[in-house]
Length: 273
Ligand SMILES: C[C@](O)(CO)[C@H](O)COP(=O)(O)OP(=O)(O)OC[C@H]1O[C@@H](n2ccc(N)nc2=O)[C@H](O)[C@@H]1O
Ligand SMILES: Nc1ncnc2c1ncn2[C@@H]1O[C@H](COP(=O)(O)OP(=O)(O)OP(=O)(O)O)[C@@H](O)[C@H]1O
Image (cartoon, helix red, strand yellow):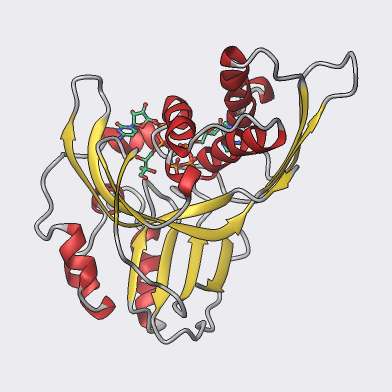
């Protein structure tokens, strides 16, 4: 079974409280971004254990602890009938970018196992497994725009239509660890509640929708402000850091992609929603 785990963008991201377990509550709108890895799951040849073959962008860490392996093992612990599998992951989405790439791989591994081995698990059950793998992971089970609350793993419906909006995502080749980024944040409630702010025209978002990580990280990484300014100079309707960075995105409401040049070491995705 071949699937294409996509990235996500955060429209607004407010860290509102520190929780007793060390995690934080947040308020953010998650949007699927059609920038994808490729992931395949097949039953292993008889007598062979579960294996993972990695190609594309290098992933730090032991492949045995890769999130897609951990996702499959989590299911195997509850469904012993699941056989060893051969996994292939071609990594394209930048890592440490705030694009949720690893979380998407894990969620798509759960979904692929559910479909391939006909486990008939409900969306709620799959989201439960996903939550155990990472805060961003549950979003990718339903993979539609939502208002995310609590640890970013509890969702409310939101009506948001970006169809026809042009989008450029720029990863300045700067790995920002999520845990380290959270350590820089002082939690506080947003000035403009996100649901109401996003219901207004996109041209107003620049003044009402923000990402606390951007404010916290920009002093030590001025390149983030430079990229955002370049997007506004190129006529973006709205631009922001995604998640805990370091990727930034710009949105052009008219649907026309801007002509922009970026340094060769940056990774850039562009498309129209
Ligand atoms: C910044 C976001 O991408 C916004 O969508 C997410 O909150 C990050 O989610 P994630 O990468 O899935 O994060 P996890 O793997 O669950 O946690 C990594 C680390 O980030 C911090 N963390 C994460 C989520 C959260 N709600 N509060 C936190 O404080 C914790 O220090 C945790 O040890
Ligand atoms: N399939 C995977 N893809 C990417 N990273 C993975 C994967 N499996 C495990 N990891 C580990 O997760 C780390 C990346 O997590 P991190 O939260 O820093 O980045 P991110 O997923 O891009 O960010 P975010 O979740 O905030 O959008 C990597 O250093 C890597 O060790």
